[in-house]
Length: 376
Figure: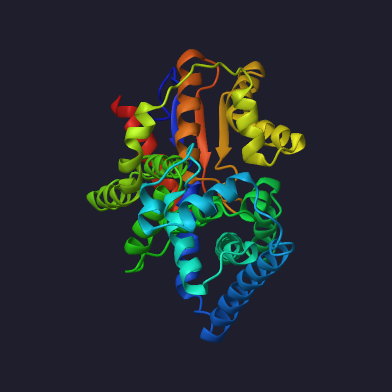
């Protein structure tokens, strides 16, 4: 960094030094603070686990209402061709891509164990998977952000219209969502337990073998690990094994996938349709989500442009939403440093941009981004 005695300071990026002072002060206070009694932490864990259990049971009870109604078309095809059939049909069979292989295989076990293929019996598995996903979301979020946040997160997932519809049919979507939730929670977990690796691989492989949409989740995991500089041979091995497990059913379907005609059709509304499907066909939700994404990309450029317009020489940014709101710190650091550097490269009014950070982890992330910027 340049000294303060330069006659004509050039645009500069720096990490506000007060962050180090605040971090050091907090570290000293934490070191002198007594550990909370074991009974307090146990009580909190029980409360979070109870919230997850209540959310899962409530979801299962609500989703089971009317479970004896007739199957829809896709459910009927699944039951006749892939569940009430030889085991090989669940893995190798396909009919206009209606089969969700590993889900059909698990439903075969339900059918063979219970001896029943009634509507209410075969809906037990998808409803249980949906309830498990909701319960895990509530438990994990409440552990990190509190009971209120956990209950709200569980309610948002459980009341999504598309999730409700697909989880109450004999289809594999709820199983895929459960696998995505489990694997993502392990990915973002601050703890590293011995069983995390095997459970992650099993969940990812099961989800991939249930539906091809799970490959989107896998791609996002790869991007997250790579962007947070956690890429290692261990993660590569997990993804390779999970992909191998999940790809087994599709090897049998490859001939049909390649042999079917693929007429070309352009649908200009596809991005909007996909967004509505993911967000539950609610226009208000789509609009709010789009506004938040646009705001996240616009805030740095607008703030710097406003500073230049008012002839300000120094600007300071906090790590917005990286605390209680849980915005990914690595992504926030990359966006902040990149946008500020691009602006300063073309503007001579602002001489210095500082980042006010509240933890040692954030300080390291921003310093890493600044170092990579200096190497370019």
